Length: 71
Image 1: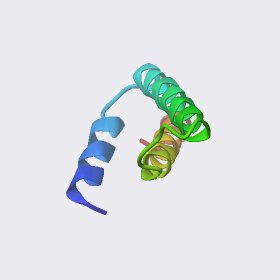
Image 2: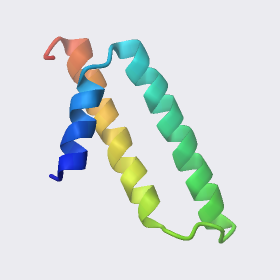
Image 3: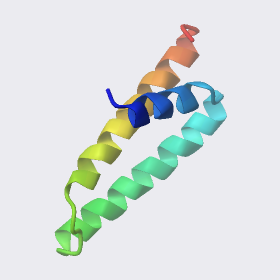
Image 4: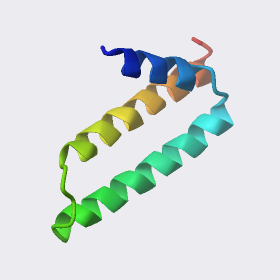
């Protein structure tokens, strides 16, 4: 895990549930846009799709932990 990733996790874990849900919605919209760009051959770097999927997974994990009271 790189420094950037660990900083992102710290930043996300400090947020409350409502803010995380907003971030999740933003990330899903971004993923939709990247997929649309890929379908129309406008996306130059396909690694962006992988990165946003990982970010969505992190947010979902933190949301689940917060809702269960683990964090």
